[in-house]
Image (cartoon, rainbow, N blue to C red):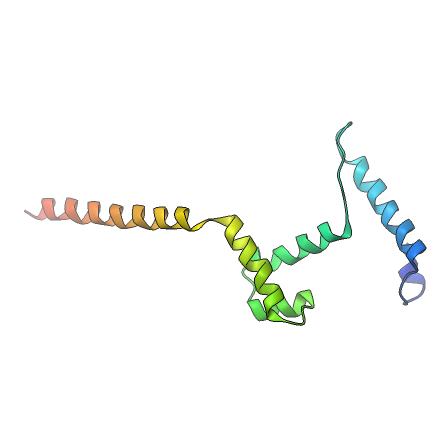
Length: 114
């Protein structure tokens, strides 16, 4: 199906361009009429790099899977994802709400005892 199946060497630039354009054509068929999508190989790479984070994969294992030579590269991705997922103020608010709820429950239990 792909040129890589026929011979196990790197594709030429023109072969890769043809291969990539064929993928983009197929994916664009799935879009609603009038919508466009800027699709690059970077989109796929970033998507793949985020999967270990959301799956809870160990940082060193993620580094190996992604082929990063330095752990700092993987940390940069994970830190960015962590910031997007929830900022510090939201986390602090959630924590304080839990503490407050625990306090309320303890107070209610004290009232039941007396």
